[in-house]
Image: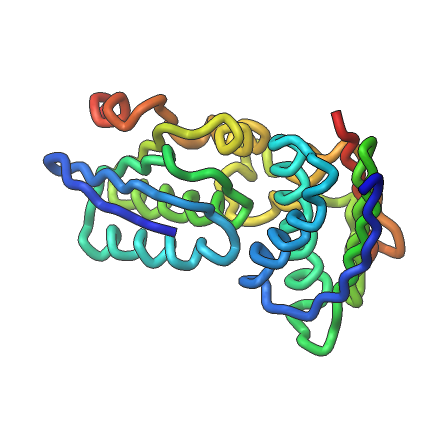
Length: 135
Length: 110
């Protein structure tokens, strides 16, 4: 397998995200990604899906999340789209600020930005695209 | 997730095994609730068999730390793998938590 493209349509509770993402990573198996890359992708996809279901769709079970993966030996591109109202992604206060360190939320997007090589938002925050370049 | 408790004097060593994510964090929170109910003030969480942590896991640990601080207690983390430790470093939570190489080192520090 030289490349992998697939779109997933999700309508599931957040508790089921980890097992769903594990299944997706198994599908990427033939690309033989290294452990650090797989950890980064897993963390970023789980955080992005959690945000999409929790904060985007506000746990509305009638709304879906769409996950698109386009992977090659060089890079893994991932898009996560929700059906919510979007959010102002430029107004996120860094969780690493001293006054935010003890907060129990607000780390998902920060982690994604640190573990992926490129992160972009579109459609008022409803669509997030992230890229991990494979070493 | 497997959660094992071991008493060492007044210190509880809580060894975790598995992955800390949005599915397993509630189970961990329940175990931590038990510590609060029993008014345990000194806790070491041993991460040697933890291969993954996400933001919900970090939040669960912050909640425990805050509860312990309120009652004058202490929390130490030990034996983090490089991948798990990196999540703490990226989020600067290595500055909030006291992290030790081994649980023996963490116990000695009390």
